[in-house]
Image 1: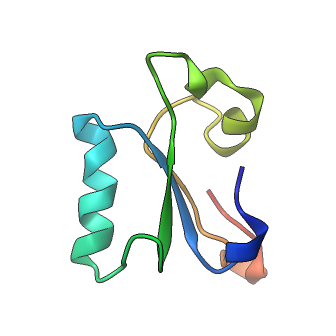
Image 2: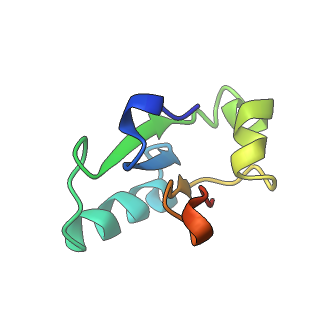
Image 3: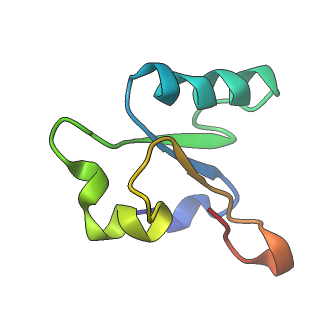
Length: 79
């Protein structure tokens, strides 16, 4: 799901719900900028996107928002 050309950018998976907006607000307030420091990936919970196998690898409990930091411990991605 992540874009390999943006390997140092945080991937944010959410939908425009109150909880989905919280992560966007927090990132902006921490000084991170959309499309520079993080990328938003829509997960349409009305269509059931949260049950897609690719998303379940990121968020096994099928909840949004979910983030993937490509620079986790030991340089490995963490979600």
